[in-house]
Image (cartoon, rainbow, N blue to C red):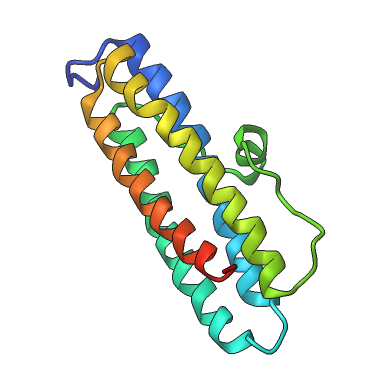
Length: 157
């Protein structure tokens, strides 16, 4: 059945495409955070291992919310790693090593990249595509990523 929610079809396509890129970024960031959780080494292992677990748990919830938003506006969420890697703005892997600082710097950079992408689309969704719901949705995601970035950044002080 066709989605009738007051959005022009061409606008909902643009929003869904952008959200699928976000979904891809979230998946890559999730995998990178899981990798950090599994492979971090050093004297701060126990604390950072738990910290990364809390971060990937948060990202897992975000992934589900983004996919459900795509479905709510009448489109399908991407669902394969191949598609995520084609659509993501992030690099899949860095070669910085397994120290907590190396992982934290890389993950912080990725969160900041996601924040920038989200910030650039907030007014675009509302003004250009007349989708206040998706604009509000990504504003909340931006705030979540800002908090996660702050937590990562605090390790670097």
